[in-house]
Image (cartoon, rainbow, N blue to C red):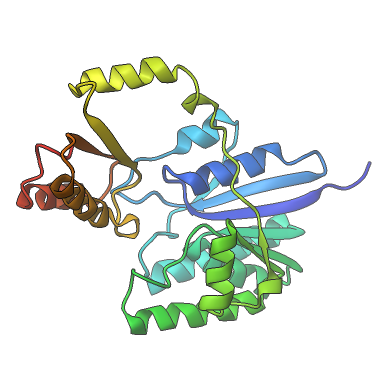
Length: 270
């Protein structure tokens, strides 16, 4: 019997979002040539857990409590040591990391353990509109260092590949490969007429009223204030009755509610 290719897949944390679905589907549905061990960090207190995603697929990931979103030299070093121990015990043929924290600690651990195939998926990046110039430059240097120790870098779109290679010079274009994220979208195309009618009834929307929504975690990288500012301009410029909906949860919920109220938009934005 041919030996299976062992993949160690590492993600920042299992929060509710695209990356969690991506790693769960990859871990569950790769063909029989592969065996996967899934590892992730601890859930942030401001976020809902999404362990139901992995549980529904029969996956039991290893959770490293010290691998958290914020930078902590002590916790990050402990997480790095635990990842090295997992690599030494599991002896993967491939280490595949997802997102920034797991990408840094996981690739370093894999490189120092002599793993020959190291891949990293960028699910986003923080190289513009997130930190100041000094901090952004620091993170770029880290990513360039890690890129040299990666077999291949995976971007989730052609635009992201162009940004990472051409604009931010993380690595040469040839080192990137574009793999679009795959999701099961069937539930969003089922009962659409009923769901639309039910939503509009719940929020007392008249047939002539336009509804515009944004769905996502309420965190800085999503830039909901930009959505609110845009909503304000739309309301000022149109004669139509438009209602806006911000759908999601996260650390900025109260701050965004205050921002909406300060603009006197609380009757227009839910």
